[in-house]
Every structure is written in C-alpha cells, then in structure tokens.
Length: 552
Image 1 (cartoon, rainbow, N blue to C red):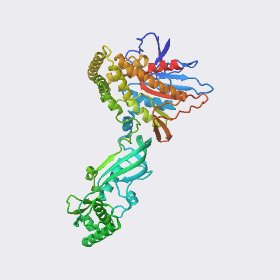
Image 2 (image 1 turned 90 degrees about the vertical axis):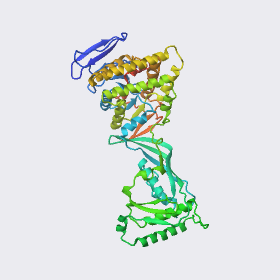
Image 3 (image 1 turned 180 degrees about the vertical axis):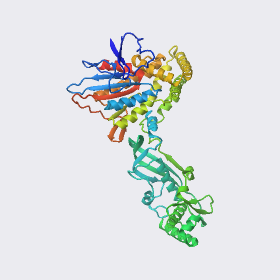
Image 4 (image 1 turned 135 degrees about the horizontal axis):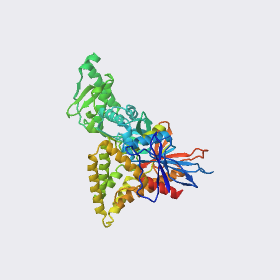
C-alpha cells in the first residue's frame, strides 16, 4: 500500500489513502474548495525509494520526491519530480517556484536538442546571437596589393569583424556594406564556418547565443566595367557648405590622387582597356581620394548604372539603409548561430517524410496545445521556458535536455503505423476525431473552467499515467520516452557520463552548451544530498517512479 497525503495551503491536513491496486482512486477535497497543490515527502528503504506526496514548507507545487541514501562511496541523492501540463500556465509558475526554493545542483528538462533552438529564441527576446571568429578573411581578392594600392590588412582594418571580437548579424551587414562602397565588388557573401563551441550568455533576463567559430569569410565577386574617363561628382549642398572651397579644385585633387593610387596598384594596363580589376582599381582609388577630402559623417557611393559614366555621390551616413545594398549583400550565418548540434531541419524532415497518419497526429497535438494555451492566455511549453530561465538566474550547475529527439519520436511512431496492425489507422482516426470534439467542447468553457480541468488532469496523470490514446501512440509518446528520460536521470544521479545535451555553468552569466557533457562529479557531503529537479509531463511520472524503484 502507498500513502498519498493531500493538503490545502495554509489549512489543516486532510489525509486520503489510496491502495495501489485500485486504479480508479482519485483525491477528494471539501465541496466548493479547490484541490490544493502537493509536494513530495521522502522515504528511503534499503536503497529503494517509496514515492510519496505530501506538504513541506518550501513549495506548494505538486511534486514527487525520490531519494537514495548516502553510502561511504557515493553521496545521498534527492530527486524532485515536477509534473507539468504543457498547455497550462500554472506549470510555468510551479517550475520557477520549485527551482528557486529547492536550489538544485542539476535540472532535467523534458526537451530535446532539436527543439532547444525555439526555447532559446523565446528567451533571447529578439536579440541577435554573436560570433567570435578565430580567423577573418576576404575570399576572391587577387594576390599582392589590392586595386587602388590598398593592402588587404588595410581593407580588413576598416571592418568591425576582427579576430576574437564579438559580432552579430547587424555588424556583418555593415561590414559587407563597407566592402560594397569601395567600388571593388558587385556582391559580398558573408558566412561563418567551423563551429568550435557554443555558449548562452544570460544577462538582464535575456539569452544571447555566443558561437566560437574558426572562420568568418567575406566572399566577394569583383566589379565588372569598361574603360571610362567621364567621372561626374554630385556634391550635396551640405558638403559644399562645410568644405567652403572651390569644388572644381577639390575635384582636381581627387582625380590627381586617384591617379596616384592606380599607379601604386598592380592593376595598370597599357592596352587602353580596363578589365575587372583595373576597373575596380579606378573605383576604389576614387573613393579613397574622396574620403581624404570630406568629413567622416558623410558616405561616398558610386553609381555605375550608366556604363559610360562613373557618378560619385555623397550622403549622410545616417540616411543610408541596408536596402541600399540588399540585392548584392548576402549574410549566411543562421545555421552556425543555432544552439543545437543536431541538423536544423532534422525534426521538420522527420515530420514531412512521415505517413499521413503520423502527420495528422502531429498536427492534432500542436493544435490541441495551441488552442488550450490560447484559452488560458499562456504559451505552450511555458514550464520549459520558465524552468530554463530560472535555472540561469539561479546559476544551477548543470541543465540536461533529457527527452528523446523529436525526429526519433516521429520515426518510431511512423514505423509502428506502417506495420499495418489491424485497427491501427482506425484507432488513429478515432483519436483525432475525439480530440477535435474535445477542443470544440473546450472552446465553450471559460478560462477558469479550462484551467481547473487542466490541473485536475495533471494531478490524475501524475498518479496513474493513463492517457487516452491508441496503444501504439502511447508506446512511442509515453513509454519509450520514459526510458530515455529515466536513463538520463539515473546516470546523472550516479555521476556517470551520459550522451545527452547539457548547459554547464562556466561563470556567473555564461553557460557552455555541449552535446556530450563530461560526467557530473558528485562529492560526498555530510547530511547534504545532491539535489536534482526534473521537470516533465505529468504522464511520465508513474513510469519514472516505477523504473527508479526497480533500479534502486
């Protein structure tokens, strides 16, 4: 027999016994009063753990506590399981409360490597990730001195992107625009290669992905043009007023200086025609010469739309926008700024390649979560978002992503469906139909009624794990994932190495993300157990508890 103690916050204890052999046992509470939340009360028994529900002074969230006693060789371990509803708003508040009150050494989240990018995106608040390159270079340039007599080191010095410097997409765009303004290039393509490490920097309640990369490459395509001697200056009134000089003489100095720069380059041609780099030399030489004449707040651009004329134009830098170069500048860094080490499209491809039945299931699950979340004014998966952000705030040493990969889940489900077991497709269609009916029913309920129903279901699932879905769906979505989550929990509690993605605390605001973190060193501390909090769907609780009791 296993006891479950039910309590109301700030009220007297009301105990209810539940025989483990009775599958229909439900907790009761006084008429007209809401069922209170629960918290675990530990009980150890010769290396095994009896899971109990009760009330402590540290938390009001519904939890189950598993314990393993300290031995001479290993420390005591206390595992706090927090059952959640992915579509309910209360679960997010419970996650924050449990982490702040329990101050765990380790946090386990029911999320996988393929889904963590979406979580971090929500935590970033729209801020760009940053790159820290070991090497920066421009590809597509000739050897030796650049056209216009400019050394490559000088060209690179004009860029914000430098070795060991943090740069974001906006910085790379501005650097690409800088290269375009030299007149040397028709287009610039920026990319980053060689992912060496990823960290999440947590500052001011926001996450910034920082990726150490081996190279940032500015791949340029040389400008092409024909010989022309017609160079036209389009001076703005503001520049004329600032310079306050004879503009004819200024233009003469620019042309003379440009000629000197062309002579200094290795692009001089004596055959009367300009090739690609000779034309580029002339353009860049003009820009360099003009820059020596005008104030820094003004930008110089070349208009090459007329094949017979080079028009030199001036504008206040503040008035220029990325659209001025958008068609000829390409920034390709999204993949490398991804936190996940998995292929970005792995989960999407798994869904798209699945059978129609699996696609229907996936669509139905998403629709159910979003519909219910909208009804209760909460985003689905809020417990994962809040759990991770609270862990970052509280400087939890390790955060493991304990769930199976979404692509594996979809593949396993598709495999079972394609076995053509009698009644399989019929049960799927029945499940989808019943789900749609349930959603329609939910739409007529008030926010308070839906919230109460979610909490009632959460408490019921944490006791029984019974989910109304076809058998093959339950095997994949519940049972197989129970195995994956438990394997992660058990290995962490033993201090063993486990091939699970993990955030490891490096300093006060930086978490290094790794696909396979080194083993967690568990030190024997007198009377102080290692505390592990696991945030997972309520339906997984019975399976995790059963496996813990069997393995302990």
